[in-house]
Length: 288
Length: 334
Image 1 (cartoon, rainbow over the protein chains, first blue to last red):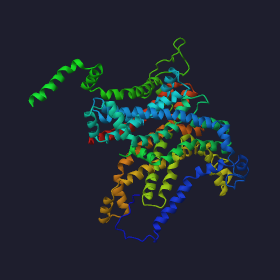
Image 2 (image 1 turned 180 degrees about the vertical axis):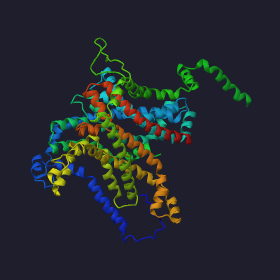
Image 3 (image 1 turned 120 degrees about the vertical axis):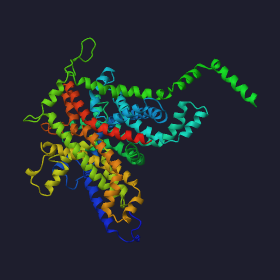
Image 4 (image 1 turned 90 degrees about the horizontal axis):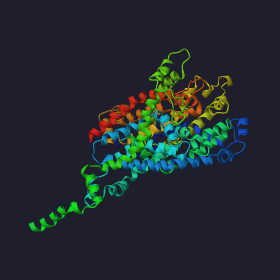
């Protein structure tokens, strides 16, 4: 790991204790534990029964550890269905947005044409748009097309809205590819589609992996579009489904918190499995 | 040699137009007019115009109508409404400065507070943590993961966890305060308390944001050349001076991004308010995004909701332009 330790400090032996670092370590340890306490607290609450907590209070030794809140949230509160819906919405939207933005990114990065910059800036600006400004017309449009209250309504708006950021990142990534390879392919008679599909896309895989990891969590975590466009409880993704659960089990905190933690599992798993890509995606989009 | 090279080539070229297949002709036309990029940009662009650009302009139009969200033409089934000019905007801005603050006034104020908190606290704490983690602390990876974790959770999950944390009777904070001996009547109601509510919501949002900012600064710090810091040290700069005059200026691009992201995120704030308080108690946690949703879908005043969204848009526009300006400068460097 990179450090700002300067080499001209006297070389210390490994066994010597750096008190400054020990102090920083302890500070960080305490800070991180306090910082994560809502999360830890939620986990502890979720494995206790409501009677136990309401009688003995949160700061007591649990009388028993139980996973019944999880099973109940999974079965009775529909979290299993909600999670499945989240995947049904997220995966097509993710594939769609990445494929479509790679098309425009290729044209914007590798071709000169009159409105190139204009289109690029439009996508960049669209990334920052407060999407509330799209809310009512998208609601109307979905109604008009007859896809309101179906998966398609949410899939389409995600595909379209996330394209701005994906195009921005992929275009900048494709710009760093060496142009000679494409010129060579062109001379060898490769079609433009062939150049895009067989040369540029394979070379863009690291960029796509990074952006896909990030986009997965963003689309999966969306709440407002799901709330707006899906009413049918059987079709709700886990984010808007959770609030239904909250309304249903008003003060049953162990169960609500268990449902919330279940809802968090997919994105947390993706983050841990693909951590490098995830962080890469964050910095690709922001630090050039 | 001259004959050899002339003959086959010339023949070929002369014959070409006649023997070209239809596909070749199209290819020739496309190349001549440089149409290739348009084939690539058109499909995504159509979708983008239909679902993003078009709706944006339609909101401007809707904001000047009195649509209630229900009235439809009996035959065409199209929404039916009248054009009323800027009346919705007079409604909004006319509600400012009353004795009892309107929901719109609360929203403007809360968005401003949210924005100010977001561009200060996550920035300072994120930078501080990144600098500490950059010292080569034992187990730094786990600290990073722990502090970044809230960012991965959806806002809905964060909202539910914090609703529990803030719960006056069963929540983490109040049971802790009661445990260390705070009298029950002194325990704040957090989300239920008009004076505490917005700060409680913003605190939960900040909790999720700090890790994000920290990760951006960690990446930025890796790009600060050690040689510059060494040179500064040779010149007699102490640790603070090295940070202030070498590291911090070099982190400026990251800081710009952090500020832009924080501003945009604070203006988009919706999920936490919607789930934790629905804008209450007594509008005290209302933000523009939430207000527009309530006006449009709970009060059936779509026109007014659209007008609120337009106000939100113009506030964001200032920052969008500033960011575009920066991106444009980057482009000119090429």
